[in-house]
Image 1 (cartoon, rainbow, N blue to C red):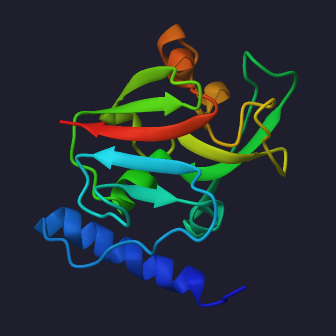
Image 2: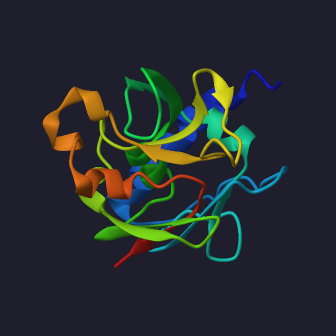
Length: 173
């Protein structure tokens, strides 16, 4: 493993923040080398494919990880989810929109307000209880919230945004 990768990703975050501030694209993400797990399209300024930002698992692992410990209405007992905060992912791709359309592998789609892409809210999880999630276990990616942290995350509206088998996010104008 390239030990310089996390440092490069930190630099990318700095550039992504600058790009969002100044609105100029001066770099792109590295192309994926493994199977694409997530494709982000729409109102973004940072891409690595034709009009899209594609991520494989190694690229997602390079982004600052976050962890949520919570119960869910779909699982038994306390669960530990690890992944990328939706806010960090949207900053990295230079998202500039009002909502996100999250689409699952089976084409189920849900719209998520951009306000959910803030620190401490939605997480694009790639691990549950320390292990990758299979398709049968709602993986490989699942948008989860810290449900136990506040009643605001325990609503039907939030539960409906907790899309599993996530494949695509479109940043809407």
